[in-house]
Length: 267
Image (cartoon, rainbow, N blue to C red; front, side, top):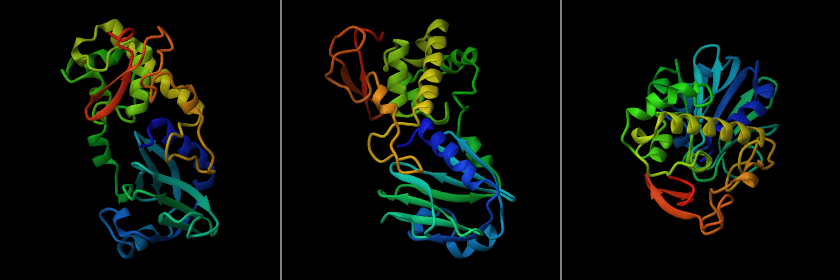
């Protein structure tokens, strides 16, 4: 699933192409992609609306309109790009927005897990999401961890605690911070919490600089791959030598997610 860096890369690339565009039409090619509405009911709501801002919240891509918001959740294999063709340029197109200049925002989704919905406000989305990890001051992270006995990796994956971190960047951040993924969150000292907060922010920022990680479905809007995967230290490297100590990297499950770590370096 695209995580914060991948969705932020998509946002940055699409923002110049979408801002101030006027929506003419929405077309839905797989009805379950559109959540809470139908093409017939949503078309008159969207027609004539102008995209005022292109935003991201956690792993969600958000179009702020004159009235309301169109929210995209890419899930496992969702992809967004602009095309001159309303049918897009691949065979997995599930939804498209047509603009007054006859360009189209295409939502393609091979696995069909992605969802798009319209809402008058972002209140419901904000209610279920925690703070943005790149905006949360590092001094405040320890207080968050101290309230929870859950495993620290599970805490990082919980979108209601911190929005946007997934399996990739939790593994990478915990390795950089030298913290075992199964440690209870409330067992971290203030120094460890600070170290982890800085590691998360550094790993996310660096991944954005590399325009996300292409390890399966993710592609940038222009169709090219991200570069972040070339800089992984542990993610997906089970059985290989630890880049710090040389011992074999271990694998376990945390919150049903495969987790790679170094049992020697991470305590």
